[in-house]
Amino acid sequence: MGANLTPLVPREKIGLEGVAGKTLAVDALNAVYQFLALVRDRRGELMRNERGLVTSHLIGLATRYSKLALENKCRFIFVFDGPPHPLKRVEIERRREIRERALEEYKRLIEAGDYERAFSKAVVAASVDEWIIDSSRKLIQLMGFPVVDAPADAEAQAAFIVSRGEAWAVSSQDWDSLLYGSPRLVRYLTLTGFEWLPSKRVARRLEPELVELERVLAALGISRRQLVEIAVLSGTDFNRGVKGVGPRRAYKLVKTYGSLDRLPSDIRRALPENYLEVVELFLNPPVRVDYGIEFREPDEEGLYRFLVEENNFSRKRAELVVERLRRAWREAGLSQRGLEEYFD
Image (cartoon, rainbow, N blue to C red; front, top):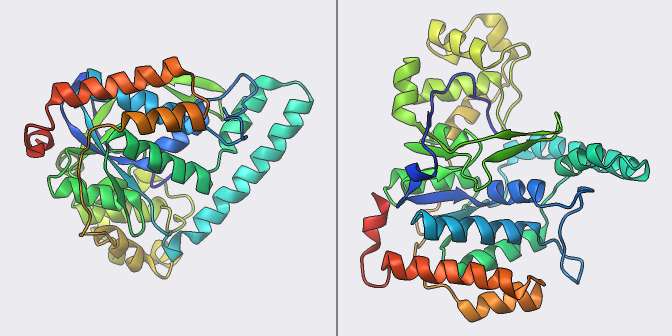
């Protein structure tokens, strides 16, 4: 989930035309979770192959990114999380408990025949296992997109890639890449233009939006460190926020006192003892510097084998994905021109 900066951050709706011709560093599991939430049957069940293995994420990855590659001339670098930082263990356990409760409620609602409410609980219960991660990586590489393994948080690695100028923006639903220093963040990069809200059991219309770090800091009149401290006050994946302090109040406090160290003693005492460690983790996160980025021609035979033979996609659906990727590769001329043209 990451930090909640929604009430504070100015952003610009740019539509899909706003990412045309751009290279985006994708928080891979953030995207995978979106597909696990959306690609389901009416009872909320995930799509599966004949072996019973989940394929909802494969349907989403193949459909969204092949279409964006062809129709919007986008290129994608997929970044996968490494082992979670020790400070994240509490949040991971909290999420696991939420998923388990949602799964039990889903089963109860299915037995009662309440499929609409069951769908919402199924979305919350979605989890990622080794198969989902490995099959996502394999499909992405067969499509010709590079994969980068982060040493810890994928958003930190993606932010590093963007700050190096190797991609234009991070693509994620969360705000954390801004805290990690990404110059740009693109949210809601979807084809359908909808996001499912399980708590309300409705879908809301979405449009891709651009968030620029410099613009955010200028609008709020703060530094990046202060933005991180606002997040720490209201809560992040690495710490619980101070009770009763949401993002707006956190902003007012940091703006008034300048830093966490200068806060009134009662609020400062409510901070975790290691709050400076959390701040430093966002400002100087562990990242990999020895990764490689290489866009390749899609492996057509490999895609047909993986999608049709191994995961029971219809031949027609696989042909559509392969044709999109083939045309995207040819029309972009990646085999003839330098990749640096696509990082502007």
